[in-house]
Image 1 (cartoon, rainbow, N blue to C red):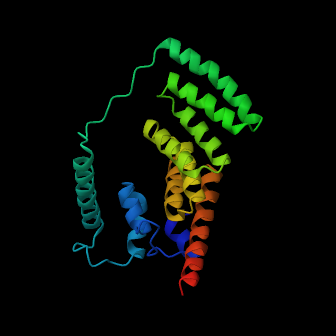
Image 2 (cartoon, rainbow, N blue to C red):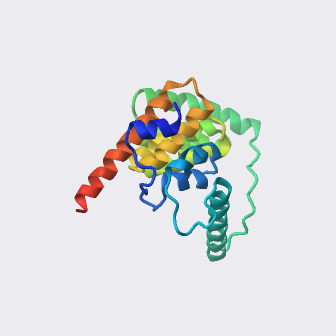
Image 3 (tube, rainbow, N blue to C red):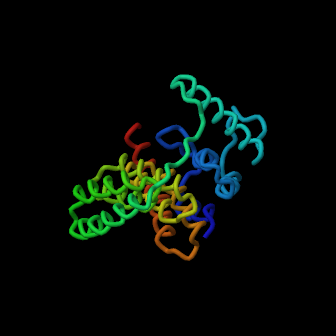
Length: 224
């Protein structure tokens, strides 16, 4: 089902801002997801700060703001902006990481999540380019209620494997635990686009949209 129909069916508000002051349209622009952006565009009210209220105009406006923020951040931190190359992993290191994975899996099955995290961390030290290690450590953090750490690993996983649906699901799950429901819905929807036949991200997307509507509704009541 299209995102617009789900938003309407759950009576969610596309103009509702998240904890960082962004509406779903702006979150989609920040994530550079044009398909979601184009779907949300006709449902979103034009802000005064945007002169060219068109799909391309808003995207250009958001890109300009992003470049200014990136330049400011780099100037403050002294970063060069040059992306570091991923390290080359030796066959020996890959073999050690593979051995550790067996231990990781057993610890996870036994629900010893902290020990599993330690084992995954060791495996990542051996093979930092393996996206599955970050994904698995993310879910362990999630089971321990450490949403920020789960989100960090999920993002690392997506950087290593952007086209992997499970990476989107991991990020969405962490964002949902942080009650950042609009962003969670976007992450789940991105996973759904990568794997349309998968029911799990579809259900998670619906639940996040509904949870966001209820959360923002309660927030309005609290501040009355």
